Image (cartoon, rainbow, N blue to C red; front, side):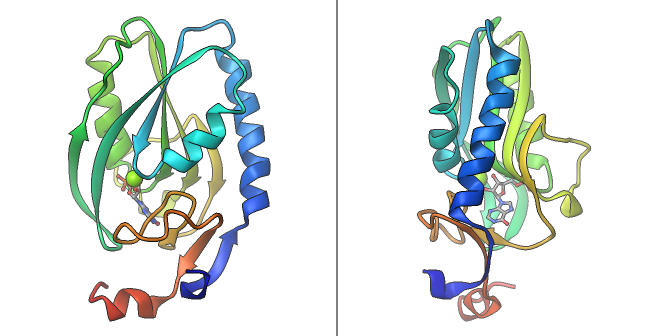
Amino acid sequence: MHNDLLKVLVTESQIANRVVDIAEEITDYYRGKPLTVICLSNGAIVFAADLIRRIPIPLQLDSISVSSYRGTESTGEIHMHKGLRLCVKDRDVLIVDDILDTGLTLSRVTEEVHKASPKSVQTCVLLNKPARRRLEIEPDFSGFEIEDHFVVGYGLDYNEAYRNLPCIGILKQEIYQSQGNR
Ligand code: IMP
Ligand code: MG
């Protein structure tokens, strides 16, 4: 898998250190509040799993399953495969995603979560890619700001592959080309 990377953008230890910092910010912010963390699966599964174990306050965990990408391009259409299972009425909700790109996914999911009458809704992403933003949305908590590259690893996929890479890297172009994308 590593051979398919043009370059490693964020190493495993850089991710681990940053996760500790974000978790501290989140802990300070939500202490004493009824926190529900919502993981956007599948992409945010790895990040959310590491993150919540660094947040030493009571919290509930739920997930919403969405998809928008085919290959390396956002389809612009969000498919919701699974909604909330827990009740978030009057609770403080933190939506966790792997990456904020065009903003379509987080805007759509935030809108959806608001329908369940939570007290507050905030967002946390590991990566922020502002270059391709199509909607006015910024994350409340963010790990790293990156340039406009298509990245994989630590939960992020290319056609469902590479999610289990422990680092985050830029895919070699020939990988998309050989599979007919871009
Ligand atoms: P948005 O709706 O365009 O903001 O995209 C958010 C979703 O697209 C994320 O949850 C990711 O699953 C996916 N995504 C965006 N950029 C990348 C990337 O560089 N690599 C892999 N997935 C990405
Ligand atoms: Mg995703």
